[in-house]
Image (cartoon, rainbow, N blue to C red; front, side, top):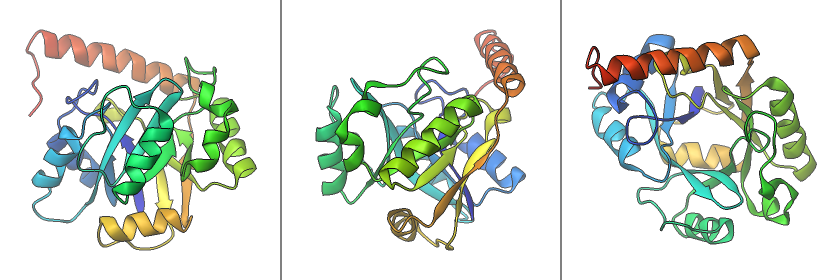
Length: 225
């Protein structure tokens, strides 16, 4: 199974609706997606409701902004409180049976690292995002090395904000997952691998496309449905 575990929609800073994400995921052959909007679960909950046919694995997710870095959480149906610390977030996620992952650890303005990288808190996280579709491979390789150093499973996600970015990086699951519970168990067992490759050309193209799509939305030439 190939699942894109890092996708943004109009509910945060993405330029796609949850329904559009599902439509594109089907078209490009993904097995599933995780909507991980910034600090809200509204997008993923709408995607779950929209997945009437149940043909895709739609994972409830969120990307939580903390002072130390961005943390992806899978399996939450309710967002944590604002300004939460990483330690508090990990405790909250575990109380809900959710899984945590350090997002793009070396992707602060492409090459910089987030403070959490130098913290022992990394040991408490379940996963590390090894390949992010909007981060240069030199930074992704550092993320994979970090995962290896801590003995953590690595995952991949496109960090898509526009249709063209969806699926550019993803996670290959070594077990078939019929539901979210299966998915969370598979991640905890480490039966996952990050896949994808990024280049400066593709990243720059994404920046241009996002700007162009934002202009079209501002002018009401296109709408998000």
